[in-house]
Structures are given as C-alpha cells and as structure tokens.
Amino acid sequence: MNLQQMLRDLADEAPAPAVAPGLFDRVRRTRRQRWLAAAAVVVVLVSSGYGVSVVDLHRSHVAAGPDGLPGTVVDPPRWTKELAGSPNGPASVVFWGPAVAGPAFGHLRQTGMAVVGLSRDTYRVVYPSQPSLALSPDGRTLLLPYTRDNGGVTHWRVDALDLTTGASRTVVTDFVPVRWSTDGTHVLLVQPTRWFTPDAPGETINDVTAMVMSWPSGQVDWTVHVARPAPVEGENSYHLALSPDASMLAVATSGQERVYRRDGSLLWSRDVSWNLVAGPAAWRDDGRLAVMQRTVNSCPGCPPSNWTDRTDWRLGFLDPATGDPVAGPGYPVLRAAFSVQVVAWRGDTAYAVVRSGSSQARAALVRLRPGVAAPDQVLSMPAGASDLTVATDYVDSVRPAGPAEFGVSTSQLLSMAYDASRPAAAVIIIGVLLWYWRRSRKRLRPVPPAP
Amino acid sequence: MPGVGVAETRASFEEYVRARTPALMRIAYLMAGNAHDAEDLLQSALERAAVRWRQLDDPEAYLRRVIYTQSVSRWRRLRARPPETLTDAPPERSAEIDHDTRLVLASAIRRLTPKQRAVLVLRFYEDRTETEAAILLGVGVGTVKSQTRHALRRLRELAPDLAELAGVSDQPEGGAQQANRETVQ
Image (cartoon, rainbow over all chains, first blue to last red; front, side, top):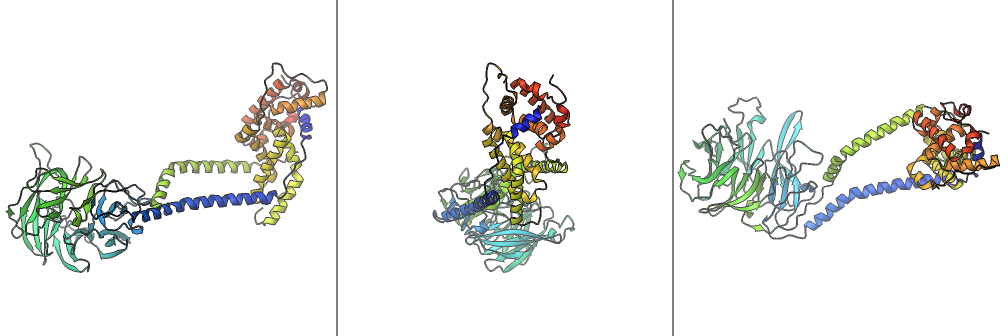
C-alpha cells in the first residue's frame, strides 16, 4: 500500500456532503443585498456633504450682529462653499492670495477670492478669471471679470454678483472692473489696447481705454484713451481715481500724473517719478487730489530701483486744476510697503490698504491720522492674504469677530479626496492590472480534470 | 455560459452540485482534516461559485482552486488549524497496519501546514504533476517542489511507519506514480 492508496482510503471516510437547499438563490440574494447596502452607504456619504452645507447655511442665518468689518479675518479652509450657491449677504471684506484655494479640480485661469460677511463671520469663495474686482461701497455688489475662449479668441465680460441673492448678471463685455466711485454711483472699468491689437508697437501696446459707467443703470457715461508708453507700475496695474462728480479722471502712469476731462482732453500732466495717485479715493471732497509720495532708497552702486521694491510712502496733496502741490496736514509714513491705496476718508483721516511684508505681500487696512507718528491697524489679515478690498461705507465700523462659518463645498471635498487618493489609486490600479494579468495567464493554462 | 437565464443557471448549478459534490467533499475532507471543516470549506466554495456561475468556463477547476486556496488562506488557517501537542517521544507504531496506519496518517496530515497538505493531496491523491499543482494553487513550480519536500520530510518525522509503507519521496513532475518508485533516503 502506498501513500496514494492511503490518502484515497482516508478520503473514503469523508461524510456525504450536505448542501443546504436553496443555496444558489440565497447566495445571490445576499450578494445583491450587500451591493445595495454599499451603494446606500456611498449615497449617504456623498449626500452628507450637501446636508452639512445646508445645515451650515441655516446656521449662518442666526448669528447676525451689527454691520461692520470683522475684528479678525482668518484663512478659509479649502472646502469653503462657493458663494453662488450659498450667498452670505453683503460683504465687509474680499481678499485673495495664497490663503484662498482655487476652484475644485483646478482651473489655471480662475483665482480664489474669499468674501467675508458684513454682519456675521460667514466666509464664501468666488472664482473670477483675474484678481481685478470692485466691491460696491455698501458691500452689496461685487463686479468680477470672467473670460470665455471662443475659437482661440479670449472674450472678457464683467459680471455683477448680487451678494444678497447670489444672482449674477453680465453688465459689460471686453472690459475689466477697476474701481467703484466712493459714493457708489459710478464704476470705472478698463479695456487694455493689447486685447484687440496684440501687434501694436511698444509705445502703445500698454495703452488702455478707461470707461466710466453709471450705477446701477449700467449706462456708459464717458470713455477716455490713456496712453501708457512706459508703465513702470506694471502692465496690469491701473492707478486711476474719479473726481467726486465723476467728471474727471486722475491717472498715474509712466512716471507721470495726469488729469483727464470727460471729453477725453488732458487737463494737465506732470512728471512725478515714483509718485502715484493715492488710490480710488484720492480725490477729496474739498477738491484736493491726494498722492502718495514714494521715497525710493537708492545708494551709490545699488541696482536701480524697481516698481516692485518695498519703499516708504507718505500722503501729499495736489491742486487738481493745475497739478501744483498744495499744503496739507502731515501724515505718518508707511514704511517698507509694496503698495498703498487710499480707499476712504473720514474727515482728514484716511483709510488705506497697505501691502507689505518681506517676500510675500501681506495686506492690511490701516488708518492714517494727521499729526500721528504711526498708522493704526484697522484690519489685520492672515499671512496668505496678499491683497484685499473692503466695503468702504464701513471702514470706521469694526465689529467683534464671532465664530467663523465656512459652509461645505461638496465639489471641493471630492477634489480633496481625489487629490489624497491619487497615490493610493495608482497602487490600486497597478494591483488590479497585475491581478487581471495573472488571472488571464492562469486561464490560458488549462488544468486537466481530476481522476 | 453567457446569455443564459437565471432559472437555467440555477438548474445548471444544482445539477452540478448533485453530480460533483461527493468528489469535491473528499478533497475538502483531506484538506480540512475533519468533517465539520470540510463541509464549511465546500459550502464556502459553492457559495463563491454560485454568484459567478454564469461566467465560469470550467466550474470544476474553479471549485477545486477555491477549495485549495481557501484551505491555505491566512484567515481560514487561523481559525481552523488544530493546536499541536508536543510529546517527549514519537507516536508508537501500530501493530494493525491498515487501520492504525490510516489513523496515524490522518493525524499526521492534520499536523502539516495547509500548504503542505494541499501539495500532498494534489500530488498523491489527485496524482497531479507539479505543474498542474502549481497552476491550481496559483504558485510557482518551485514552491510546489519545496512544499512537497517539506511535507514528506514532516510526514516521516511525525509518522515513521509511513516511510516504509508509502515509500515516497519528493520527485520531479509526473505525479505519485513516479514518486512512488523512489524510496525514502
């Protein structure tokens, strides 16, 4: 007797198989139920993101306080909900920079911008095609630029986003928004010449057409062509300020300051080197034109100064009729800043957005009071907020910050899950391919039936 | 069996179960070492086959593969492997060769590792070649060879009687017929 015979004798002792009746149907029913349960779990998980966002939306309606700028602004998390689907009412602050993530699944031509509520600390995000926007002084409307590619040609449009309802409408095409007038009755927009004449010579390629539009009618009041033969401030920086009656436009470009009349004629122009129009609120109600006098630190042998260098800034005033300097109170110097933009006045006190920092600009809203040595910080921003704009009606109303509410963006959550799963997905895909490969190899090698 | 309805698939499955489960049960019994675990093993294999019955080109090969792979799977091994008892002396030789040797063999087989048990059953019960055993187990031929060698050595250690009775050794493919021609060194 050999081992084979012994094993066969041993196998003969196996009991008769007792297969449960209805095995086929039971197994398939159980499998179907497991699939349904798994599908239900997936549906619950996906919809829970939407559910959480709905809960958050309702929660955002309960803790409203007085209107004003928040005492503290924080970084919005990546899953912050998009404003269009979940409006958070009038805005106090809009900021952008590395602190604000881009859209879900990435889009190179869209920039993430955080919109902070006026009466509560609700955060929402918008994704315009360029960080050139205008927030109305009352914080109710945001003008945003968007692009659309059509047959290789890029078309720009400006949408007015109603922050209370989330509704959006296109107000003009082929322009980008730049400023809102301080009284909220006019909007200043710009059309770069290069959009339509990309082959223009260097002297005119950076020219722009500025347009003054009445609000809310959307009527075009007037336009003016602004020559920028050497825009040292950068091709995409527009230093423009409307007069209080919207009949004149102050411009700083190419080392000059100029004032244009509404008929397009030049009232005056003078070389000012590094000085600039002080910002969208440069034109005071008393008729003076505020300018920012820059002190460029130069030394023998140092490389020539650049527009992007950090410099010291101090407010000064010009006569808008002649361009001659006029006397004014002394303001504190803003040191080592990339840019300063006066956005509002309360009496002789100026409110300005300052971008400073070492390598990465960090924006802040400061108060410049005459006769005071140093500016007061009104609004401090998180480190990744490189620029901001505020509802200028509320620069002197700072409310205490409450708990921040961000909503939940399901698409951003999915995008985050996708990003996180990419390394694991690669491993899984390789594993599945290997498994199929091995399986197919096994199938190609038939096994003869057992004896 | 593409294009076949559920009723026909069920009929086909049940007909197969009636015809082939006794043979499959014998393999499961050898692999599991006891009736209860053998039924569990067979039931598990039939359940797996039932949900994909329509897609199976060779149900017999699939079921055998499931029985073998399940019996050596980690989870089943953790649950089903009987505890080993260490003794001071090897088991005593039985005087009644046929009956007692079978008992000794059953006991020794239960104390092999599942992989060793699988290669022994394939090579000496089913009389498979090393290549066929490797395909069924989803391992390389070298693994089958080494596992066979280890299994036989372990059998000799656990049951010295079997060395004389079976006269087996680890051999190149050709199955038990070839292997039985060799004697234990």
